[in-house]
Length: 432
Image (cartoon, rainbow, N blue to C red; front, side, top):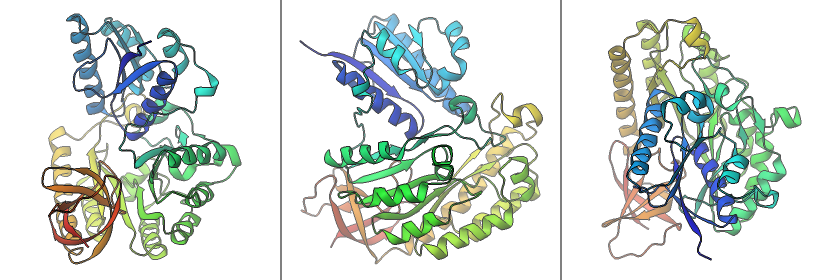
């Protein structure tokens, strides 16, 4: 019997991608043939997994839904279902505004979606997952939700309180994926350092990562989305202990002025933040820190912004992203603060901050010229193989472009690369 095709479209972050991969695994086990992120509808059934984090993400999700609604009107699609963060938060409004969608579901409403597709959710297939990434790396989600309640953030409203996955479930999933050829794991959560508090009554991220690092076949582990308050220093000891834990940490700091950190409900101050970054670098020599900063939060003065600029210059972050404040209904900031900074001023501050970081990135990249670095090969282009060092996460960080020069490399292979030149963000090298 021919399997029925079904399109799965994922918007938003890597955590959403893991949800789509789990849904696709269950659909495949139920007899469907899932296809991920087709450029145009290629099946008669489509499921859109939406993002609802900030204004731009919500707009992208709405536009994608409307594109598929148009395909349905043209007869290219017979059934359209919508799930994910946007649907979780605005289901009633979406049902009224876009009635052409056959049904809206919450973020984790797997069973009803499967039932409406004519298949019951079966417990033996709940761990199934169909990877959409290149087969050598995968995202590993260790928890859901968040208990931090930062003033600007709607994530706790959408995903609820923090829930850690049992450690044995996570380790079993890693072993399954290693058997499938996965070498590199991006460990992700809304808030990584909170892992274990609900299940084990204490922070357990260090012990979890220690156990993952000991699984044969795990060659790289990379840590994403740590939180600065009550940071578990023992995690740094584990990073130093294992060579397969990348010297990389993604820790969202958001701001530096005490005034803004208090406004944002970050539960950390400027002095503690400087001390933490210095401690991380002392405990794990050579570590590359990625952070995310926010400009334009209500109440941010020009003096606050000057402190933020100085912070970026002082810290020389290896990787940095920034975004402008977007008011999200239901958050503390939306109900208690006035969004008092114009869009033009937010954009100006964002541009200034990213220009500072561009110069820093160019200098840090130039310092790598002449070094030999371990690189994993992600893909092949016409003249280059494209890979990443241990300091680079997929999709968001710089890449290493390796001139082919008659050499044949395999996707997913590790190789030693001499860095020969550098741009602001990407590196160029040759095989040693």
